[in-house]
Structure formats: C-alpha cells, structure tokens
Image (tube, rainbow, N blue to C red):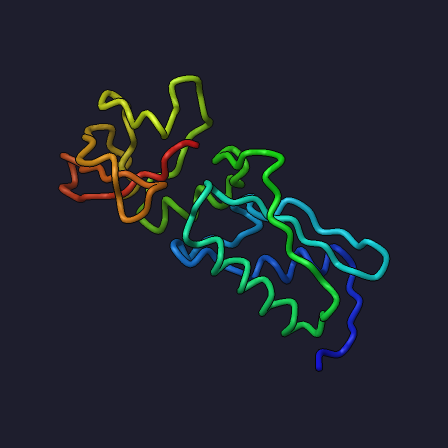
Length: 168
C-alpha cells in the first residue's frame, strides 16, 4: 500500500520533469508542454495532460511513467486526466526543449504559422536548418520520419541525414 504524501504543486512539477518522452528521451513531459496543470482537488492530486496528437502511441507510456513517478514519491491519491480542451502545439515546447532537440540531432520546430499543417504534409520548399552544422542547404527526403511527428531531411553540406520535429 502506498503511503500518503502531500507535496506542493511546485514539488510535483519537479517530479514530473523526471518523466521523459519515450520517443525522444532527452525531453521531459513538462518542457514538451504535455503536462498542462497540477492541482489539488480537496486531498486528491489532479494532473492534466494533453496528447501531442490524437492516437500518439507514446501517450500510454507517458501516463504510465507519470503514475510510476508519483507512486515512487509516495503519492497514492492522484488522477491523471487526459485533457482534449486544447490541441497540443509545438509552440508549447520550451526553448530549452528545442535546444535539447537540436543537440540530440533533431531539427527543432519553429513557431507555427498559417502554412504549417501537418495533416497536409510539408511543403518541399520549407527550409529547415541542419541541427549538426546549421546549414540551410537541406532537402526534404520524406514527410515521414521515425515517428509521425517528425520528417526526414538531408544536409548537402555535412552529408548527414536528420529528422525535423514538425510544427503542429
């Protein structure tokens, strides 16, 4: 049985920063903007999360890891709610998360614009800087990368393939 523990919401946020994205392990769920709120309703802790996109296979693993982390910290009275009130956007990612993506070899998303519609695909004219050498001499190879939220590019200057985290 889990012991009863009460922590400040600030402490809970710090615990959640220990939960990483299973598809991009250098990012945590807080800096990705997946965790939307942490609050107590009476003595029950409520964590609201928003999926990066409907049907994202990582969301079940993320929710399970949040459960594991809270239990590890001795929290037993909590609920993780999936919130669809707002649609997740790459604009919710912190600048630190975008820098981590670049250092990991994934070109980070820019601010979303009217032309960014992941459902309609990428425009082959979109210039994506190489995360390795910052060259703009890159080319879209495939709209589909290792996950649905990424596409595959190639840098003609450093001859490296890389993924681009699509603007959503």
